[in-house]
Image (cartoon, one colour):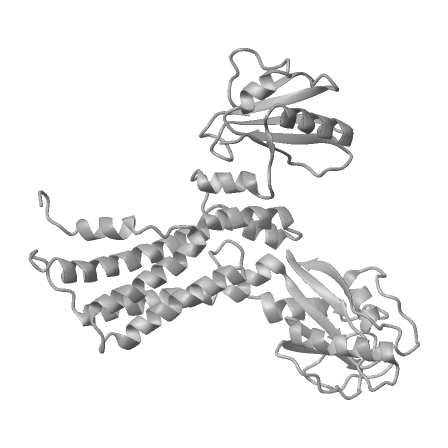
Length: 431
């Protein structure tokens, strides 16, 4: 296989940069130009020396990882050099001239998956961890990287395999002294599997919150204090605030953290009828954000009527400007975006509305690929249950196989070997 190379740190000016090589030629390629590697290089030891490509020299630290004890499962070398763009580009160009190949996006982690160093759920967690912008995102990604989701789905697959094996043995090996699997026994087991898959599917909303955060749209009529509320929630001036109606004409997004969760605020144009073409577009965007958000902060001046807004999100009514007039609505959060009164209470209400029962560490599905796979598995399990009294067991087995493969698209385990092994494990010793 080819030896690949890439810069593993951002391609910008920095104190230190890390260049990775992976493949069977990694060590020999680096030995040619790095004085710190002696004839006998100990794996996982950091060596100091001069790296001389003929064009540039740099004082570097290098470490060798021997297969299979590396990130990719192959021989790897990591070069720690100075973070000059000129230095890193020159080093990479040299090794490409010597036969290494520039790595494609995600190729190091792809090699790790192919070589059995991690499953698909862990591979996805790597990029989630890299992209984490909140404590909850980082902790959730690490939990998945540690194998919690893989273990949960793998256990479900094993249960499906056992159910399939019982059916297959009773169908294909009637001469064996094995008690025939009845439809009633199958129904009980499949029902139990269905409950577990449904429970897994129901983790999506909380998993999505941990992975992506919560999107909040701030919606209301002009001049009710939407932009000032955004600034107050952020704790700094981000949106332009004036007394002129229609100041905000486009959406404006910014994020803050609360209890480790990322909350993305979207300030929108004031909702009203207008002949201004640009403002009309802004109102249209505001109505769209109201439909696409997780939480709608519907804001009005204290004592004023809330206009009807179409949304499927959870709605929090906010009465603003309580420093000037009394609030009247019982189910509203009373605030003054100008003075800051009620802002911390509002943050808590937002958190409790969507995140109160969300805890990091549990195994959850957290993206649409997972959700679609689990939904497909559940549909096959439900079809098996619906038809179990009307079709032969071989068709039920087919539905179970489809459910097994759907879950396997998450973990990467779709092999039939596990099913075959389980079937033959039912035989007596010596048969």
